Length: 349
Ligand code: AMP
Ligand code: MG
Image (cartoon, rainbow, N blue to C red; front, side, top):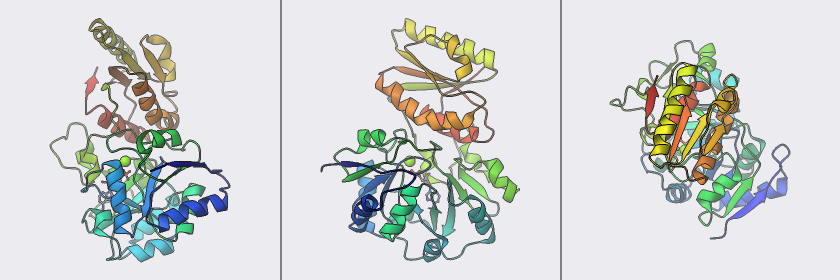
């Protein structure tokens, strides 16, 4: 299959170009498109065969449910049994935006979308291209990140092309995505509001509305024996081809430990890549030293993260050593992705 890449203006999307993409969605085909989080791989969320193509082209395990993307609360109401009060508050404050909420699903939602679960994950994206594509398709769009399963999520159309060339008919290139990490997944169906996957909307943000919100305890690095409530969280993810180690602790000690690990690896003949904050860049020497952004600007670190991991892989390093960041605000989501990318390998100094 030929994969067409079309450029669409991300602030004022050209209507006729989005019409062509929407026609593909209505025909049961896949279209990759930008959202404010990462690029999504979209299909008509009510068409089982179309959704199945998502699983096939990503190599995604069938037990990992998908998020449905809607353009309005009207569309949401068609899909769910009820909208609880807490959900209404969150929708009011965070939609459109990077917050996915779990609802009890209606029959109309195919089993393949929810992996047979009684809940369905739904969000309203804020990216103009994503919103217009949903509206013109006239159907909720099921869309996981548009990468091959296990690889870093795509934040540029070129990343999508790397993974999906020849597998899907169309990629919409709308430039770089904003947040750079996936949406927060929030479960409001249990006793307490629970974040199942940290993301663009932070725990601190959610607690302003729902003070008793917690993060799924199974997500902590020391709780590997617990089963996360979100099926996707049990897989190794975002993984570079190189081995990866994270180093956390007090800044001076992190720098010393990374330099020690680098020397050790280089003596073994390995090529090393380092991911660090701008302030520490001058303290390292390695095959590639990648600047994630200032340590006081975690939004920029989040924005750059997946692109840097893909870049380092392209330079064919054998080992990536990365500075840990503080787990406040978006730092929690950054550390969640980094720990998955590193397969849990964390050195504390
Ligand atoms: P992705 O679309 O690849 O960003 O992943 C969507 C995330 O939402 C995965 O971690 C899924 O496991 C999670 N998810 C989707 N639907 C549900 C659900 N009904 N219950 C729990 N987690 C879900
Ligand atoms: Mg994904």
